[in-house]
Length: 280
Image (cartoon, rainbow, N blue to C red; front, side, top):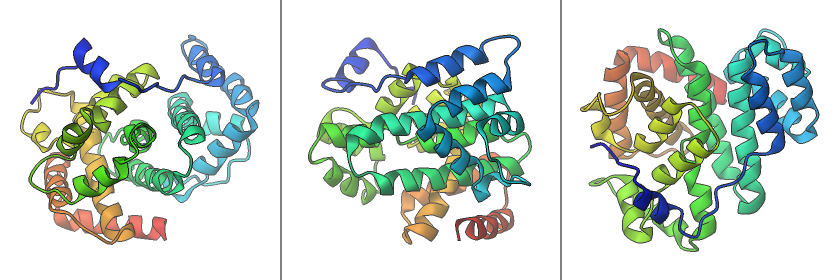
């Protein structure tokens, strides 16, 4: 089941594709976070210096999914209340969206779905023991990041998405590989590595369409497997409630995810009620 990312795989995946470069504001923030005495105000000033990024951060942290007791009005407050790790994950996710979105044209529906899934993943992570809430949000926003990049590369990629969505007897990525000699999970993994995301998020992106990952638990780290499970529940709910459809592969992943996270059907029903209220 293990997917080997060899130089040949990298070359084939990136053929004719340019990975977006990290903006300078993100490079400076990540440099600040490496210091032993990281200053939330310094991070806040860096975010605040980019008007568009600051507005996006505030919109994100004030959404119902974060459940803050009071409204955040400045980047300084966001960095102080959420912590450095969470702030860095949010900034990285939003910066990548800006880097891709500026080139990919009309992708509002894609990013809107990604934001909802990220928010739901963050909430699910908050209600399970030791849930990786920061990573779950970042992974929710990043997990399909290869899709908009492939949309730019292949004029017929939207047709691939439709075909892959309607195929239940093989993985989504197998359809992409067959039609384009690459897939969004491998590409997303390479983007995440290039943007210095945590290794667990990179791993989870690579395997998030592979059901067999739950059978070979040594193939990925426990944290990566938990991220995949949390995301599977979020995607299933999003398909069912927002897109009003359900696929057999999504249902299979949901069952495997519940088993991995130790959640019962009754507990999942409770989660659905909470998520419905948030999305509404």
